Image (cartoon, rainbow over all chains, first blue to last red; front, side, top):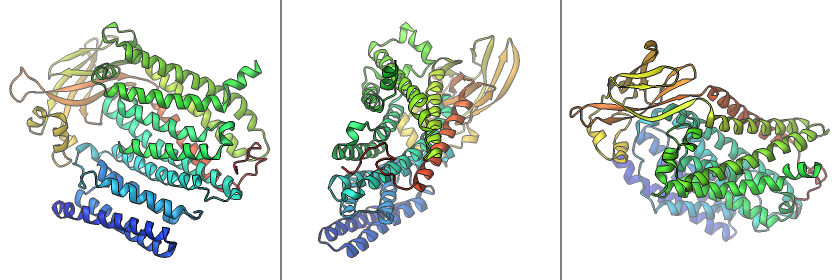
Length: 245
Length: 281
């Protein structure tokens, strides 16, 4: 089963990437309906890969670059497709970022992560599960911040849009904290302490403060829309990068 | 005085402190990755941080400097958080609009302040002895006349995994090969030679006796005691505040979740309601 899956993974991921690239081209060519169908086809490729990982590895796709990125892309893509308050131009930028991240995955081996006995622990599973959920939501937030940078939002709607962004960041924070909570319990059970002085913990704390930066923007910066949205986009993508690092 | 307090409670201070903390943490990542400072960072986990700080043997000025800077930034952030919660967020609770949201915001910030205090307490309360390498029959002396003795080590998988590179072993020790229930360490805890507890330690399943926690970190190969003799690396820690810390942590997440739901239900704010800030620019 694993051998067959290993052959199918690059094919299905290629299907996903082709779908996103086609969607991007169609969206640029002002054909939104056809673009949406192409995007759905791309998502279908990723979804098949996601299911295949579950069947082949007998666990959720949570570990290693290939599994993590597939999960993040599915969550962000789902958010993008079902976003009811999507402004004009969001699709084009969204498809572009989805294609970019999918394309980057070809730089890594497209195979299952090795199995590890600790993956049996529910705390370990929750840590990775909520981490990827948070990364997906924050990647979507990054896409929306980029949309706001392009003047696609009418001035009358900017305040409502900024509030939606704040809610999205807050949702990402809640998911991230759920992951960190599970990670702290894992750490306590495995190392006898809830915190360790190590690279991974410094990285998690940096991620928390990076998200919090956007929720504590001072008044004088709040008036600079571009600076505010650029910070939002940069920190959201930086967080996703740190998650995958 | 009021001016100083309002400055200490300001959004700007919080923003810049968080920015500085992000940079400082990246410096910490660099130190943890740098071969020259990595062992010193690793030493920070061996004992209680307060004991580490006053231990001249493990002192590395770069890591100590980084740690003190980290503490200082967190102290400023705590002062900012406390001042903001006690002044601005407290006063806002009595405004007529969005009372639930404002109360929640006050509670969330208060809980985060408690989490920071919890982290501080974790640095100095109780004790911690990490990375204790023990063979069957070995004892380790603990404070107040207590002692930990390893009675037996049951390692049910081939010892070849202990001989190979740790990362390589990790790749091969899958769920099918390593059964957590079959690989354990039997220990006894005594106080003045009187047994107070005994039990088995499993991976991710420590032995708890009140606030005392004995954790199995990993197994290792005993070099001078036969070809297949296996020992265990343990951590003994005593911390009475862990449960309270996790309770506050969970409560903070629940409050944030409720806050998120109330935000979703609230109608879009007018610039007046938003403190006069016009985000439409």
